[in-house]
Length: 458
Image 1: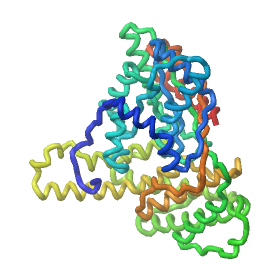
Image 2: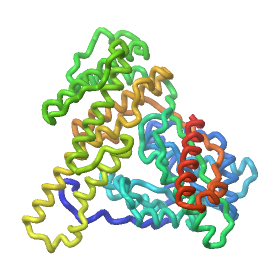
Image 3: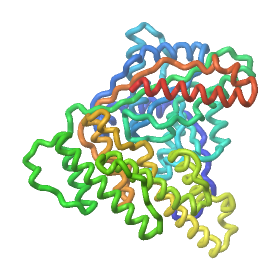
């Protein structure tokens, strides 16, 4: 469908269905065990969340769960946390809670485009509200703002804005979460309500039950074959470990970078000249510099087509490219498709097809916005190694046109969810309401406090 010009994306209003939520809560544990690699989910400081829900249900507070978002499986873990772990801890602590324990949530409006329309329906029925990233989506923002101040449940959102594939590295947080907190405080103040507004940082960390070095070695073989590298069969008799696999990962990364550099130089006439002087003997640092130059060049291909200036961090630039692409595909002037001639429709489809092709470059960059050359070297664990290899797999999947969200399962995983200390929005609200400068500073301070809090949960 994204190869054809279409009417603007419609807002999917939240339509909470308690019967569907009950069904999800009932079958979620079985579904997680059978459909994912998740073997165990545990939580630290869940009693903090139980007490917060008690105060919320007592009309004393409003709060938002600001959760880490390393993988697409995170929402399943959060629903499990709220439906299974928090009620269990509440019973143990003697905290009386009304059922169900749930949260409204914000999700990217683009998800149903690649995951299926049923995902948008399901999110709506579970009380979710969509946001279009990369623009001021006032309809989506009004809905989220109303749910924060008046919804039946607390809110949940990922302040990183998207997954980054790394459990132990947090992307720069978007200021929208802090802004929503102050909007909630403002709405409560105008209504004469006394609830305190809080933002609760939530950490999510994945680890393997057993180190899957053999599965990683096989995946490296598959990636090498797909990219045209010879596979060394003499290593098949060796027991794989980080020491033996790390040079293979570096060689694969260098080869893929060379292929992509040649691709962009030959067919897009770009001059890729990263400054690698002084780091020629440091393969990791040289790779990092080459990768950054390549990502910047790939984004410029899309930005030039959409007439965008390359401002901000890579993640910010990706958002703007994505929204520009949606504007070319989901067009305001196509609300009345029947009123368009066959030629107008055909021209619109040509624009949509070209926009989708330009967005492909942005999708490649999106996978690598959090990748650095030192992630494994700083802490050489099987988890960090596996996450890096899976990001490389994701890139190849996007190049080959396969579904990049069906990632290989390397082994059974356990998830640790950590509830941090709540951050008070209400304490900063007097500064926020002073003037525009004070408001900007309050949003920046709260965002910085949240970033530090979430990094402290790793």
